[in-house]
Length: 91
Image (cartoon, rainbow, N blue to C red):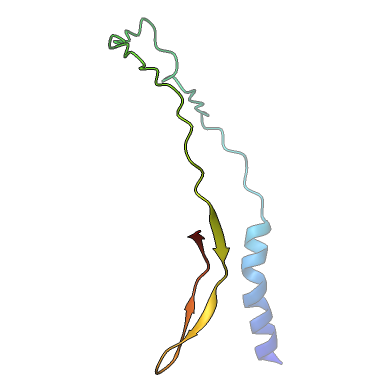
């Protein structure tokens, strides 16, 4: 019975200490604003823009490459099977 009382007081002690309210602190509160954004007379050095001429090429009609989809399959080798992935084949 004595052990129960001792354990209960040991468990309740931190809770009772945490529930005691401390008085409010009267120290000065410092609020810092972001002063890095307010820069006066900032000099920006920019490089001159170099204009490159665009060469206009005529539109060339290209021949259409016809392709057919060959689905993947299992290929049997001497010792095991290998998966051959699907691909496009010209025809």
